[in-house]
Image (cartoon, rainbow, N blue to C red):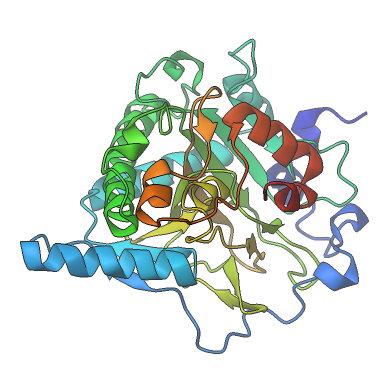
Length: 347
């Protein structure tokens, strides 16, 4: 069995730059291959300017966010209050991390006996996956309490400082967006501050090395996020993210210093199906590596995920279309059953 440091894709790509074939384990079956990339009907996700803070703007912004979340499950935000320098710094830290020698990277991710901080290639079940994905991923929890920080990488040297500050700022933004969604949906503004619903965020950093033939492989398979919302920082000039709408894939163009926000499956349940956790995937790139930083707003394990009560009271006889379950139960099923599980969520 190969050692993980030999399996990391970045390492493999560096070694085999001269040979031009995609290894067979990375070839997608014909029906999921992206084929010709970025054919888009000019369709793109809404861009929302959060900068208008005057009172009459607030309602407009809330309506834009609500509409985008109902129709696309995705939107980009600009003038969001997170500093550009911090966004640059954090992206640079992760690029630097992913370009370190494999053994060093793995070493930096092996401090927690519970393996909460980890580095893997393709998917978390690399050895079990029949088809591999063209990426390496670093992930670790980043709760507001800061309790996992001593398990985070310590290299590059200012990793913890920059990533700590970044996760703090992005959390504020996430809570602000959730509060606006609550207002739009007609539920208590503080809904996501209660019941542990935003206490367990995690950071997932994907690194997609250049790929010899992007039409045959994928960086990430079609999926919905098992989060409440996800806030994504993409590389400024490398495309890769695609969203499915009306049976058509279209690319999410990177806007410098914008965040891509998407609704997770948990929020689809909490909104009783009004907001959509949209399916998305990542395609690869022939020339450039791409790094993306996803901040997942997740609940604590014990949190109960169910349609929000206020929705049902306000909606008079509205039926709940989703079952109630703990986040732990949701996660276990989501990762073991995959897409099949989504049909079981319904009442």
